[in-house]
Length: 409
Image 1 (tube, one colour):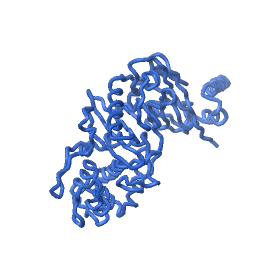
Image 2 (image 1 turned 120 degrees about the horizontal axis):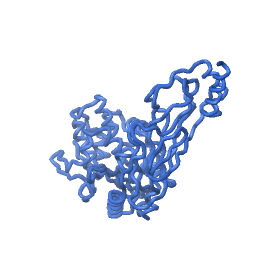
Image 3 (image 1 turned 60 degrees about the horizontal axis):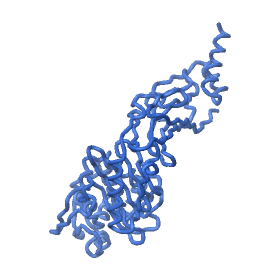
Image 4 (image 1 turned 180 degrees about the vertical axis):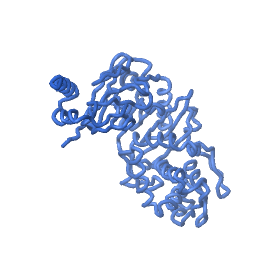
């Protein structure tokens, strides 16, 4: 019986040139950004990511579980956006604002509110704006109840969506971000969420930057102070939670480059804004883009069991690009990870592994790898050899095939 194993092909880092080889590849790069430049932040937890390449430019305690507070509303928005994209609801679909939504999240609560009227309908599009522009808790609860039936059911949808988009360290218990011991996320997961929303919902993303709303004859300005901070921000949310601190989840664009920044648990509004600005300014000024593999360039090879070929090339499907510091010349490392050997037949374009690129202890890139060509089922000889030699590697397999071929001449 064929036993699958986790294969790791380590790729050595060398001088700014990438050359694919059968068993390994040499990668151009520089080193750990925050160590090389001595950059630090006062924020307890933070991450800075280049949106286009997915390169992590800086991280500090990015996997620390922290109650997300108002940033949970961005996860609420993702569920709503997915329902809109699937055609299950529309922007003009009316949801009735329940007594629960009004009492816990509206005017009577004394908290951030859209001031939607109780037992009155409001369209999904306006509820979204109320939730994301002015952080209306009444709007968030109304959306949750309209889609999930109850906020509890909706929060389960939030966690399921989080898992589906790669947020592996988050749990949600409500749509508003109200304190709950079972609700948490991380700077890394929130950066994944922001990137997913920007990439997947370009038609809906602009709502985050709306200057303000007017509802029930009450005008309110956008609460996200990042939008007016002069750093190119066009989303997403800021928040605060008692005994936790001040949060920011932002996306900024300068000269065509977009950075996603997360700052969690800052001690004050000032520290939140100052540290976010420092991270963004440093990111835009300190890095340049490097292509380490072309879109169709072989990154490594995966073993194939029972195929006409003993291995198949792996490619990224798009250029493998990372951002590297403008100063310094430290090395990075990369590796290909897959479960193998693969079983023939293998179809071209099948995702079978991942490329992981790290600087020091920081993983700066994690992207899928795809098979470069078809590998049909091999001959009886190929399969017999694989049955005995799979775990001994391609070179042994090929030598055995040549020897057997000579015997049959």
